[in-house]
Length: 316
Ligand SMILES: [Ca+2]
Ligand SMILES: [Ca+2]
Image (cartoon, rainbow, N blue to C red; front, side, top):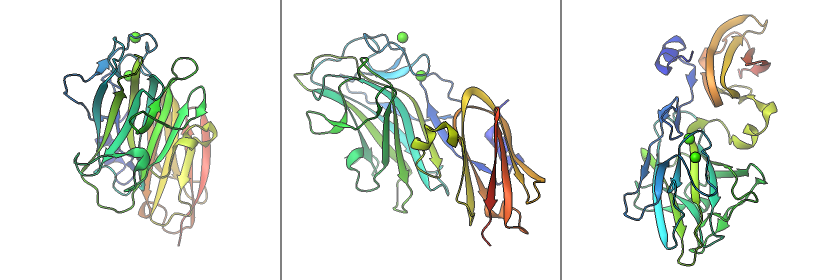
């Protein structure tokens, strides 16, 4: 059973789980829903539903996605948009925040494709995320067949996603990770997804996305996320102000128990004892919660059938 966040908060007053917002378009996010707003222009192709197209037939998480029309091919001369609203209030002390999702692209090379822009001023002005000089994100695109891929330039000059994979279209793990730099940011960052076809574009299935997840974190996570031997990480070590702990789970539900132990390995506190859904999870522990009289303690984690112990040094 998963413990509701408010209950977890009352049991473990200072071990703060990372905030996560999700949107898998299936109504069973398990977390607060990440707001996604589809533009209301008459020719807007974006729909949420079960894809039933030539190449796009299945969602990443069944059964729904957001897609440029669930059934019809994408016509030339189109521009369709939706916007993802990223609230800034969950960030707190976390040094980094990131959005990741899965996408498939089936478009006419350069003549059509998708690109993403960010707005730091509630939608007055927009910048392509690949050209973001305000707060350049760390971007990783990992094609499930090709591995790491790079963006491509569309015929309108925007850097984005175009063409198709060797099997027609592949799921691409796509991550955008921003570092908190201290520059003032609005309450909500906006990420605008634009699907574009020029007048010469051959119709394709277009652009399909699923499983948006927005969370705070301690480091650019994605390369580590793909490495299963890094399923449990702690940083910084030695601890000065706060210790960040993150780990991943693969199964639909995985029992997770994380214990704080003293220098003699005696149990001090249970930080987490829960069943968690698949994904990346995090905890933050204040320096004050770690033992005051010692400079060494241990975090012992049991995650499904894996377990590990991390030696934590506490800065004097
Ligand atoms: Ca389908
Ligand atoms: Ca889905």
